[in-house]
Amino acid sequence: MSSSKQRVVVGLSGGVDSAVTAHLLKAQGHEVVAIFMKNWEDDDDSEYCSSRQDFLDAASVADVLGIEIEHVNFAAEYKDRVFAEFLREYQAGRTPNPDVLCNAEIKFKAFLDHAMRLGAEKIATGHYARVRLNPATGLHELLKGLDPSKDQSYFLHRLNQAQLARTLFPVGELHKSEVRRIAEEIGLPNAKKKDSTGICFIGERPFREFLNRYISHAPGPILDERGRKLGRHVGLSFYTLGQRQGLGIGGVKEKGAQRGGGEHAPWFVARKELDTNTLRVVQGHDHPWLLSHRLLAQDASWIAGHPPPAGACAAKTRYRQADAACTVQQADAQGFALHFAQAQWAVTPGQSAVLYDGPVCLGGGVIAATDPPG
Image (cartoon, rainbow, N blue to C red; front, side, top):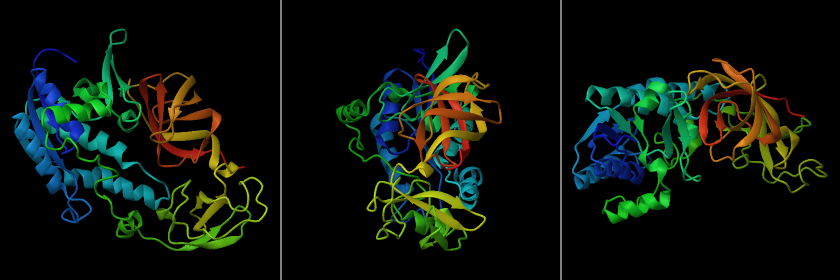
């Protein structure tokens, strides 16, 4: 991080990570200004997702730190750029990750543009990641956060050189416990605030109830691998691969199940067949239908501006997953193929496959297909 004083606009969310981010930057002598982003308006006054309390928390932090804060409404941009795509993906039977799109389209595009209009030289957020300028290549690299349990580089893999060049991630150098300690030490009012979970526009409300308001759905059969009917689903959009809870077939047992782990093994969603509106389930966590050695990804985005060369690499197919050894094949601006040494569990179309070279995030794409079930 540059030691020279800069005008830095911090995205202050009301949470402890962005609050400590603002404190650290101010302590380093930077001119710090805060922006609170309001990204959702539908039933925002409900018990599930109220930005009002978050703004009050952010304003209290700004007051303690002695910095200005501006409330900016990006709800229209969010609905057009993130939520519309979220609905399209679910309607198509895939399971999208809106946090990835939100970072690329709102936090590091709409927010960045707004900050630049305010005369910012850099922006900063409370993400657990790091940015490094590689002197050998002259390129900015996105690195994992030092706290492996909090690393958020997976969600930031669509950022480009122009965005990274203007971005600071101060808490990426710290562990979460240290962030909490700093917050308490300097008397931040949100030092013990719980971390937010999930997507704000869904909040803690039942996910199925939320999607039901926006997506058309048609009930259909739940079949096992042999075509036996086990029940009825409420609409394919409401299920994701690997899902175990909420299937409504908990009492059904497959006698003599060989590959699934016995007759008492749980059922998991393995396939969604849109052409026949059929949900396929299998019994047992390690059923072959849930394992994939190969995936194809589309809509690739590379942090260096170009794809990595074919060869050995590591990748995540879901957040909080350990890096898995793989081989990159056919990587270009449109997409790529990955072949994993060890089969990956419940690789899900619509989620992101993100590539790594050690701590360096290379970029990634949207999972489009996996090798067919056995």
